[in-house]
Image (cartoon, rainbow, N blue to C red; front, side, top):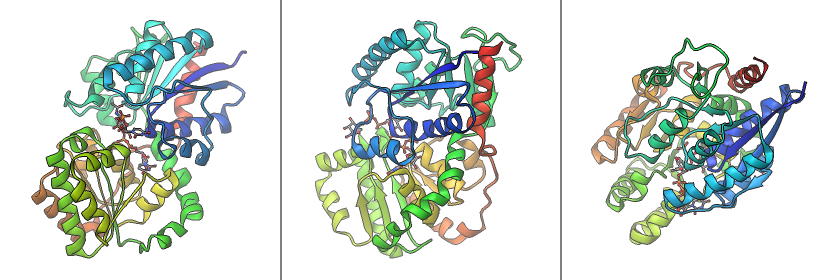
Length: 386
Ligand code: UD1
Ligand code: UDP
């Protein structure tokens, strides 16, 4: 029997990390059955936003890099669609594997669906119910172009049913007769796999940054609602700067280039203040293993990231989310994630609450058994046996 040829499409930091779970599962369990080729759109291109992950996580290196770089949504997505189309026509994969909700995901979905290549969407069904988020458009369009949809949570699975997907569909599956699954989260596979390695390889980082275990706060900010609205970004960062002083605790901030660009262009004084404040550590984006180490050892996380808020759960840390809504609603229901928007009062109150109760929280296993990538690959292979 010939091998199944899968085209992985990645472009943004979290997708590269997600694809490592699939790459690893192929390498360990399905090398006889699956050939993997990877297309990088080039959406993220700085070394610390891209190459570092391929090196550190031993991910299958991209066979194609479109090098599209940064641009407005339409221009960026169009360049990706065009480049992906060329690769689909030359490589003729059996299916296309998409991750998450970025413009690279959307471009892959459109290019593949129009050429009738089956689309497999990993992290399907997540919804914020806020269509002003670019990611919400990307998710809906990608899900509705897919043949196999792997929902990481029960809530995501139910969202798909509410949009008309039918769990009772039977094979053969097609774009018009898609199959939906409630799996788990491949990022949980990754956190389990890399947690110990992160300690071994990156442990000295804590000492070099003079960070004591369980005595620092980890902060990431990158969403357009926070970075592109100067007043909002200023409110958040001024609040955090003052809290770092009051609590006399280091706040570690590995900032996305988008956030640094906004600080440099509209908030130079605040940026200088942050850099000169002894308790604030603004640093460049860190590698995934370094991030894992920081998440595992901090006392609380403050973020607007989807991935980081989930990792807060994997590493049993309370988390403030700098948004009004989240796709990972089970975390809010569980009380370990608090939605604080950019509201100084909410940020301060929930922070104080977690400082008191943080040790007594519970972190149930919402995200599978750590073998989600294997499950997904088994199901993908069935698509081609039927
Ligand atoms: C993208 C995703 C978002 C995801 C995030 C993960 C979309 C619409 N958004 O947002 O869902 O959460 O990635 O990190 O796809 N930049 C650099 N160097 C880089 C990459 C970006 O300097 O390597 C700067 C550029 O100024 C660019 C800006 O960051 O304009 C935004 O990058 P972009 O990829 O458009 O969106 P993200 O905010 O990264
Ligand atoms: N991450 C990282 N280094 C950083 C910040 C984040 O490796 O400096 C990882 C993080 O651990 C998670 C993923 O990047 O696995 C989340 O990506 P991001 O926050 O950029 O996007 P989102 O998940 O919100 O789409």
